Image (cartoon, rainbow, N blue to C red; front, top):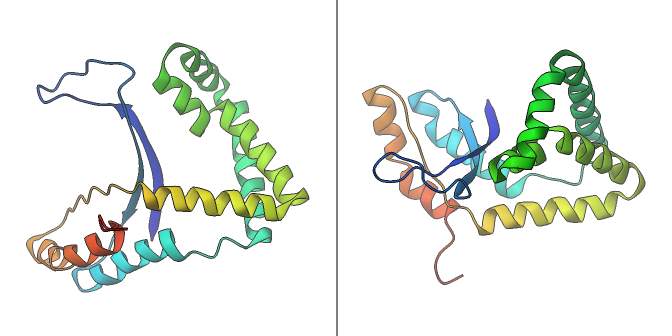
Length: 173
């Protein structure tokens, strides 16, 4: 299976220290597991999900937004103090602000707004989703982190040039 997350953290200098609290790293993280004989399939699946996923599935998007809204509402009841701390941090640092936008109370309100938009004006939301995908692909700067035994790493490394060509746009484009 595949999993997607975002990373929001301070940049670390060459000496291992963080210096500027406004200098952040924000990345989309795709994770997957495969046996050594299926590495090429995993890389192709990751590419397909990013580049070729059919976003025009209103029923599925509405279902996912309702599920997300419900999970937030449940988390507010059980972990309200964590959301309160996150909300305060959002006022103090850029990192806290971005964390709130992408996974805090502000994100909950965005999910509610997106759900309403999906139900009332699907073409508008679809256009926004396609723009987000285009932006991700245009600014993609992948870091490929491999973990495995020698056989798995050898199999994965044999596919890296194909992966780089698929994910990284050429300079001429």
